[in-house]
Length: 387
Image (cartoon, rainbow, N blue to C red; front, side, top):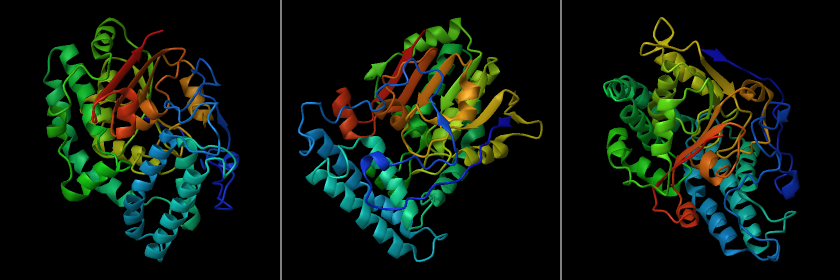
């Protein structure tokens, strides 16, 4: 396994009342560049339009209001995790400051979307949330939850891999691995409903695998992907990963291991800085070191063609015009790009076009996303495009 790294200066939010155009990325990667496999660097990052050019910029649209309310509804979850962050002195008071300040910003946008420089989008509002957290003194409020879920998932990794390896038919094994990704993707503390479920009784990975909504899914290219899998081999695969816990360990890593076994080089692109319960680059290195055996293998499969890359991102969604130089270099000759998770594969980048084959794979976890797609809540998206 190889790792890439970038060092730089982490910028700090100087003022809490920001003009929308001043909301900057907090990545420690000093120079972010466009992802080289994008067909159009001026692509529309956000999938769901919040407004049209004819809309009055000072009057919120129904879509804007629903998304701002969604972000308001998850503030209590963030506040609770911040209060319990033992690494931060006076965490309770700082958590209250965060909650009040971020809620105040969102309420301003509800009154007048142009009040802080222009109507916002999801990228702006997620970035504001991270910046307010960091300004009041928090860096990684979900660390305890991530560590706990990672520890649980590591114990289950061997069993999940063995169950998949026991499936002799290659297409059926692939479908099982894909279902594992979707089941793992439900570990999402950015969803108020799912955060509540986790706080009460956790979730069972095996039960979730069995209880995915029945196919056909709202976007369902699984049969096409299975057919292509059997007929072509990709030399280099870039996977933009999502959550910690079952998502990365029981979903993505068994799938990546299968790609390695088929002869592909696999690049796992993870966030530079913490955001919600998304796995970071440094955390992923640690996770894989715990899963590898003394020969550097994942359950008998060599990791010599596995690279962990810092994506340069600091949000639960991603703007592919701003990735680390290391990732851009590694991606130049990739022939399959996988965007995993609702934030990276649906809320942003669902319609992103690439110069190579691509797969968007995620579970629909927000009612607002389900409404846009015309889907069921917890429906699944498997969008495969061949070049």
